[in-house]
Image (tube, rainbow, N blue to C red; front, side, top):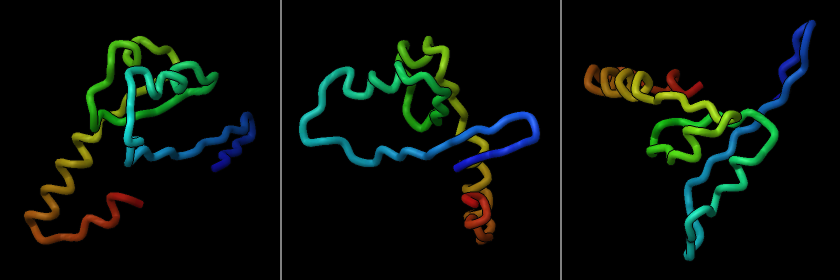
Length: 84
């Protein structure tokens, strides 16, 4: 995805990790800590100390989104617009 404003041009991508390999090891995703770009993650799983200390990683809370989804589901309302 590209975002262009009069003063800057930036790019973004979405990476979803839904499955891990059959064999995992500590540090499997540590290379993400060294990328020279901002990385935005959600708090759907707890961040390690290394992630919390990384200067290029910003963690966003999904709590407001989950709360709104639960509220809409209990009111039998649509949740599809939450994910646009």
